Length: 53
Image (cartoon, rainbow, N blue to C red; front, side):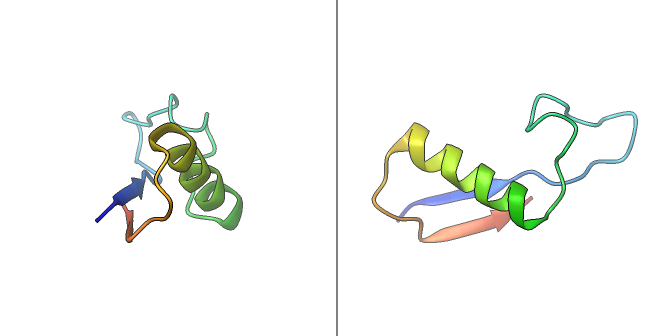
């Protein structure tokens, strides 16, 4: 089983700008960017569980 997650918006002053820059919203663009990055880094065939964090 392979699981991965996307980090979403965080209230100031703890905004993690190292995660997809300042654009860390749960929108279509960022969801696909985060899962594509996980797939490239870890190289699984597919994802069983995708978590919103």
